[in-house]
Amino acid sequence: MAVILAVEDEPQILSLIKTYLEEGGYEALYASRLNEAEVIVRSALPIDLIFTDINLHGELRGGLLIGEVARHTRPGTPVLYTSGRGVTEAVRFNDGEFLLKPYSETQLVSAVAHLLRKK
Image (cartoon, rainbow, N blue to C red; front, side):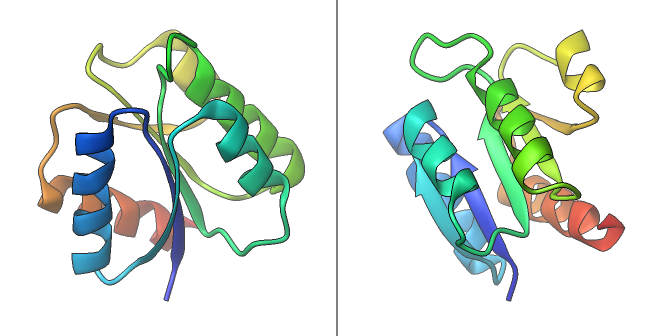
């Protein structure tokens, strides 16, 4: 079973993500703050994919920082970014995939499965 790190600062959205991923057959780790996510990414915990909101608690590029840390500490780990603001040049620069909010369970699970197949 693939392990997904989900990073989201909105409690209701994080709860939905948890439901979506678990119903999709994934095991998930969760973080609601940038520093929590960074600790998990730098840990020895298994992570097959990172799903992160770009904007975290006022950190307009917080999710992009998570992607940067992952690229250096976990090369090859796919990152799926999300935001309600649309794709940014920074996401394209980071070679991440993007899922626009709001998204459905099917959209999230399909995007995760697609990235894991590419891995």
